[in-house]
Every structure is written in C-alpha cells, then in structure tokens.
Image: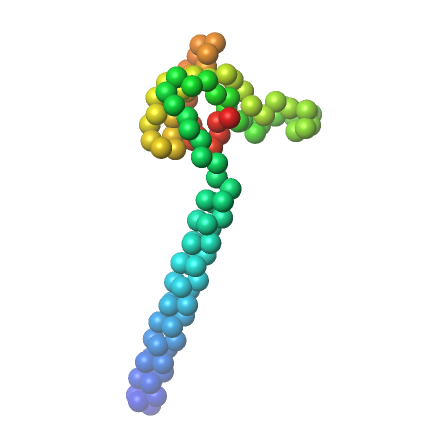
Amino acid sequence: SYAEIKDYVFDLKDRLRRSFDVVKKNLTEAAKKQEIRREKISKDKNIKLNDFVYLYTPTFKQGTSKKLSKLNTGPFKVTKIISPVNVEIEPVSGGSMKRVHIDRLT
C-alpha cells in the first residue's frame, strides 16, 4: 500500500543519511591519522637556491639487484624554488632542468 511505501522510503533515507554520516566521520578520522603519521616521518629539508643535491631515482637496470644499484643520481644544482615542496634542478654537468618534489632530494 502507499503508506508502507512512504514509510519504506522515509526509513531508507534515514538509514542512508546515518550511513553517510558514519562514513564521513571515519574518513575525517583517517585523514587526521594520516596527517599525523606523515608529520612524524617527514624530514624538514632546508633546501635553498644554489644548493647541490642528489636526486632519488628508484629505477634500476634489469638484471641488476636493487641492493647493488645506484638509487641516487647527481649532483644537481637547485636553480629555482617553485613552491615549499617543489624545486627546479639542473645537472652540474649540464643538461635539461627537472622539476621535482623535495622528498626525492638528498
């Protein structure tokens, strides 16, 4: 009957709203935990203009073990600070500039 359908729709909307609230709360809590974890492990890098750095490149030749591979390339010179987390670097030996995240620099 119509009254039953109306009740069902009202009940369904209520359950969906409560489910949405639970999911939203859980996502907010997870984001906060992730931010706290990130702050704990992140290293404050004071990279300045004209600093010499090495670039972490986690690729290695096929057939070579990761343990024996060079994971850092360089040296590079910081030529421009684009944002607090991105910089532009240029190989000291000459070559094209690269825009990289500071987490990849050592």
